[in-house]
Amino acid sequence: MTALSPLLKQATPVVVDHAEGCWIHGTDGRRYLDFTAGIGVTSTGHCHPRVVEAARAQVGTVIHAQYTTVMHKPLLELTDKLGEVLPPGIDSLFYANSGSEAVEAAMRLARMATGRPNIIAFHGGFHGRTVATASMTSSGTKFRSGYAPLMAGVHFAPYPTAYRYGWDVDTAVDFCLRELDFLFQTVSSPQDTAAMIIEPVLGEGGYIPTPPRFLEGLRERADRHEILLIADEIQSGVGRTGKFWGHQHSTVVPDIMTIAKGVASGFPISAIAAPTELMSTAWPGSQGGTYGGNAVAAAAAVATLDVVRDEALVDNARDRGASLHAALRGLASAHPRIGDVRGLGLMQAIEFTAPDGTPDVATGHAVQHAAVDQGLLLLNCGLGNVVRIIPPLVVTDEQIADGAARLSAAIEAVLQGEE
Image (cartoon, rainbow, N blue to C red; front, side, top):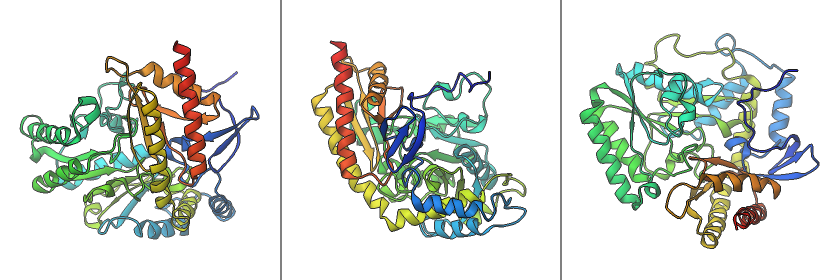
């Protein structure tokens, strides 16, 4: 009898029968409030009628039209739609299937454009599981261990995680910018550095918003040294943080953006975006792929962007995110084991810390598991001591309050069980 790889550990025991909006209905007959959104993917909720209809209609027209062989209308329409929300000057797109592919394409473009070999990434960042993207990932050793050597030319700089350092944000930012300058002087000279890549909000690394002043410091150094700045918007984009793009919480405009996850409400499509002049420096044949820009996924992405606009989901993420953040603050005031509450929009997290100040991994995992018993689906990140809360962007205030109550019950159950 065949089975899934034993390495694929399920975060919950739920087997889905069907799903709608913020709810997953299990084959066990229970209904679960889904605050995972497929790891930030189902931005318009499960099976939004407009997304479903767009995909159905496209399946009956053409399913696969390889876009370097024949072009199809959904991809042209998607390109126009993204042009309405991309920063000014970022006007060229290359489509792929996954976030890892997009990050790898962005890295390849940066090296070709500059003729330089090195990439600087930041501690805690997650960019993928392929050899190149795992080489740029430092959110956990599980993503990069066991198949060395990884890609050469990647160097890591400190990320301003103020809570972990025990500092205020400004002190952490000043320290990390100084260390970045020191790295330029000692490890990767600017003349050898093609790009810096950063998530506007760390995802797997712990749901930590990148301070605007740090992003602005990176932009200044990138401009001064003619280094490209890549914003990995795969998890923080498409309204998730209460701005359309996570980097828009600062004044920074990146040179290259990577896009995936929430852009198509669950259909696999990704992209990199850059100015046409920069994109044109990629070598012929360096961009392509059999399934990239699939017609059905593109049609779903067009519908997703329309729903995000028509239902004001970016504003909803901002407002419901504020309600969620306040509720999590309330939980933290009642439970000293919650050491930190952080996030932007509907990208929020609580971090469990032991009395001695070390990460409380056991409690983080126990709370995530206990939440399932309360009918609430959550995920861990960071070292496992961080519980992330990622509702679909269509979530209501009533569902936020419901989810917070279920999370509170899960925490109470775990802590009482320790007594």
